[in-house]
Image (cartoon, rainbow, N blue to C red):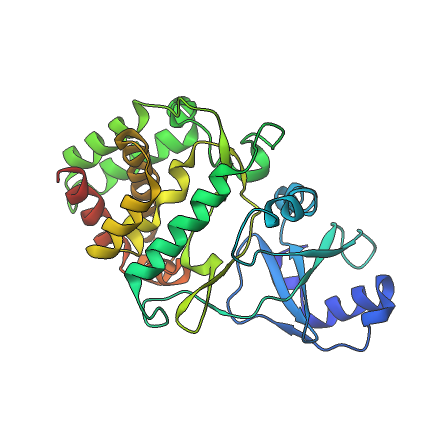
Length: 308
């Protein structure tokens, strides 16, 4: 069953069959939906989240196990699992019911003070990184290896994909500088104990209320490992003072920031290259990600920052 087949009517039938106490509540698709899951509001206080493909199923058990533990140590709101739905003839995968969290996805227009927003996001990450990670899930297929050391990718499709994208785009980007940034990102690893990482820190997973950061959602890509993957917003969303504040508040070494640049560069490169090959418009994709600027600008920002 693909994402397009997951409709409000189907969710109503699922709820009726498995959670009849909520059968009378309206089901409405959320305005901003992710790719990995389809999310619906259930009444005023609940939401329903259904994986859009089999490869996302492992994230459900992980979130139900670990989110209540993480919530004890995090000052912002994060998703609260309420119930687990099971596969049936209507929907072939497990699914989840969560407590609804009010707020709008982050954007430059919705944030009252970008420097304060950067500080608050950094505080969330510091709290997350401080949580005991010794028994947490290592990076793997369940989170597409977010938090894994970048040298794991050197013989993988990610490294080959990045290098192919640089070569493909060499007529419109600084290919030598992009290669240097990517090679530096591959040259180091996280040498300290693994920490909890969110894995997909992007504006679409940050909720704003009253102009301030209110909640962080979608921990499907979480794991314990290298926090470099959580730094991408430094180049895709923050700028100037807010980027400086985000960096200052995180207290990470320069090599971790170099690996973070690698993550940001990889995403921008493959998105732009896909457009040039006839895929989705790159700027439309950047807008869907919640980026402040388009993919071409992100590449330039990353390369310029590497030379500061």
